[in-house]
Length: 123
Image (tube, rainbow, N blue to C red):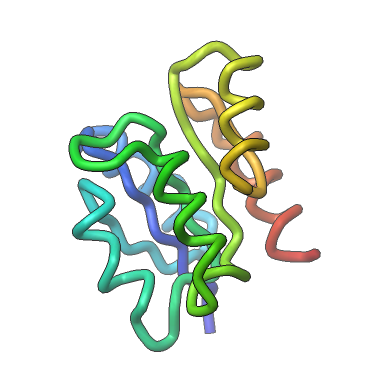
C-alpha cells in the first residue's frame, strides 16, 4: 500500500505540479486548497502519512495550522512540511516555532521534495 500525502496549497497549479511529482514517485496524493478543507482529510481514517502545507493560505496560515495540529492528539504524530516562497531563514523560523517537521522553498525541487519526504517517513 502506498503512503498518503496531503498537499495543502491555495494555488491550483502548485497542487497539480506537486501531485504529479508525488504520483510519479508512487505516493497516494490528496489535496486541499485551504486549512479548513484539509480538516476532514487530516481526520480521515487512515490519516495522511505526511502533510505538505503552504504557509500562506486564504483562511489560516500554514504555520498556525501546523501549531494546532501538533497540539491535538489525532494529528500530533503526522509529519508536517511547510512550503513557501518566503526567504529561507524566515521559513526555518516559522517551521521551528510551529512545531513543523521540515520546510521547503518554492518552487519545489523534485529531488529535494522526495529527499525530505523520505527522511521524515523513514524516521
